[in-house]
Length: 72
Image (cartoon, rainbow, N blue to C red; front, side, top):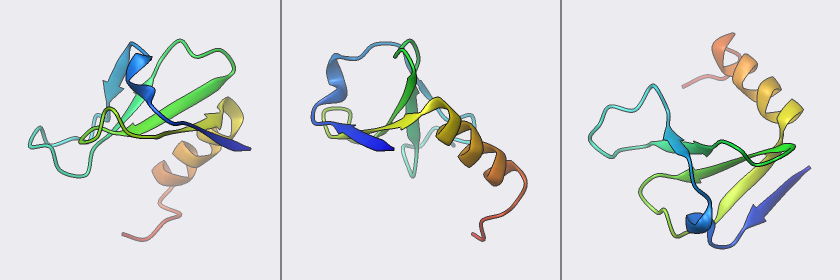
């Protein structure tokens, strides 16, 4: 199940994707310390909506990315 947080700027401990090029393009951030879930937001819009994924769902998604199951 995915939910949203309308303004995720109140969450702390955001970390940017290790694949970020540092130029602000196409970056996501993940918040640590949100019990039982993984909030994800667009780093270019920190006051915008964040999607919140279950830990299992996020883990499955990241594994699929690493395994190359999505075409670019």
